Image (tube, rainbow, N blue to C red; front, side):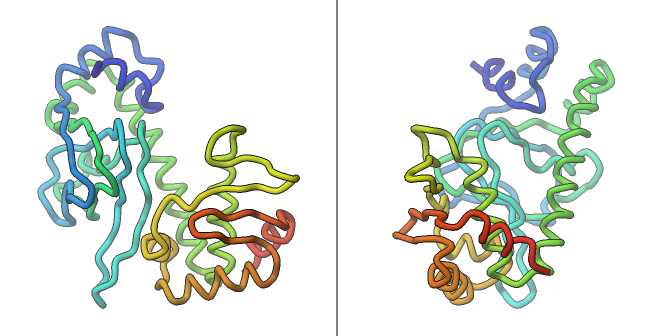
Length: 231
């Protein structure tokens, strides 16, 4: 069971059965109910995690009391990887829904890396992709909120679009569903719910999207792409 879950994770895909078995021997399965913290910013960093089921958010607490969501973690993704290089966690994490994770202790993983260097190389590749994602997030924050929202909706449909699943083509348009509450989406986009609502209404009035609760339909794909590129 554990080996199968590890094999499904992109960061560990391609490892031999023996390597996966050694990794499985050090991981610790954990369950977190929706809303429960997994670790907090500045906590002692003694492990990183692989999400096997559910959803987790990584977020920072700002000085004015607001929170800014850095990323949403899906099944098969790791989080807290900075423990290999830092003594404390740089951000907070919490389960967005009931979530199952594998806790990977830092000391045991470092020992395993010395024996299986490929594990370290794979994790470095994951961290490089995260750095690229964070650079993109910084660029997004320089855009007006409607442009940030347009980028998010386009990326969401690109990830979810698959016939018969959450994203599908209907009458030549894209239909997708917001995976989080509008309050959480506002935190993800670095704004507040009121500003997000105005941006959603702006896109709807411009006939770029049609919104019905969590369901939205991209009516003008090229127009939304043009808005997403505005600086």
